[in-house]
Length: 119
Image (tube, rainbow, N blue to C red; front, top):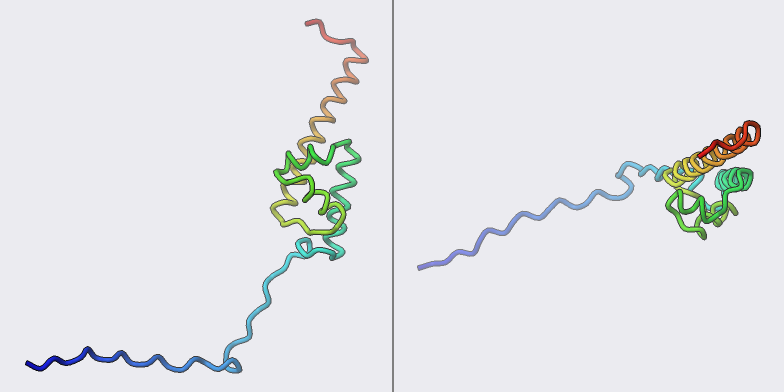
């Protein structure tokens, strides 16, 4: 009995030389994510000014946005750039805490004018 070996699969064609390949597009970069760019520095400044203007502590905003205090500090100083998702969470955190403080201030002003409600 004669045993024949299995057929050898054909070789793949040689790869296309680099010069014949279409050029690769560079990855899309959001300027805010690139540390040290003017956009990242400005975004950090905006976050810091808004936070301090509303009297919000660094830790409180970091907790509200779900980031660490050190990361938020780096963003505010322009050392690192925030991702688009972090920017949205920071702005939401500033809005939520700011709205709560504004409501508390309005309530305190109304109570000062009208007197505290009887409990």
